[in-house]
Length: 401
Ligand code: LLP
Image (cartoon, rainbow, N blue to C red; front, side):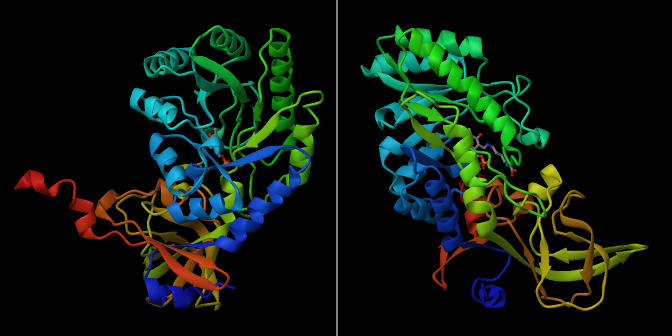
């Protein structure tokens, strides 16, 4: 049990709190599910890139799925070995590609033919052979929120099957490219197994086709996307997930990679905020808290649901919106929710905030980002201090002098 009021007193609010034991539990449950095969769980750093979180996962043996050179650097700093780090993303810059190649990470995941050309050129300049994979877009509807669906041809991610084949042939014939992996990721917060299975079948078939022309891939990367329960979603069982994927790989001797983000961190994280005021605009009741959309953007951006817990109060309830101090009508955590009446400084917990919470935060309205705290074996520790006004102006100040 997390003692939220003690943490609020010690670290102030708004505050992100991560249960590291829960992170371990989630990681291990997936690791066990894949134990029948060689598997690398490359944690999707974007879901929560706090160095202490990544370090915790490094100690558990995780790899890292990165989408910028900044994330690659974080993975290294956190102690993830280079042979477990991969680098994806549709828009990698030349200097990012160069640094990734120089750091000798496991592979670069290519998302277009044009990018293949750049990577080849940079590898040539460096006099090396770049290990690559191709992100295949299998044109499967993952049945999730359109903003987090990635496996349809209407999405910007990956390349279609024909293009993938062409890229592998080009890579095979290149002095400076070494095709070692294949990758797909059809979307995030997936709660249905069938689309994942269908995508895996398509991609495994492509692996077999490539074998026929002497292209032997070693890594079968199924991306991330495992959904979690925010409200009452029925989620995919990790064992069934692993079975479904393994089932498509008959006769293929490949290391499985997967890139879980949300599955590892979402429900390990809580966002703690204090009630400042209540107000009534005619019929409509608002509870105004000290956290805002700059801290946790998901409700504003995706109309995402996050369970709200009123800590100090369980009296009679009425419908209200929980809103933050940011100057935007989209600045809310919950709408038309039954809530008790609050006093100044009462605490509210916004649950399932460990993934895509802090990381999608901003300094909008010149608001410093919240502090982050880890709880492990009943002990709490600060893992990122609260941003101050001085932090926010540090990069501008010299220019007005
Ligand atoms: N691998 C790739 C290639 C990805 O694009 C993503 C997520 C992941 C792995 C990790 O997916 P996960 O296991 O966390 O579902 N901000 C959105 C989610 C964006 C996901 C982007 N890609 C949200 O708050 O729901």
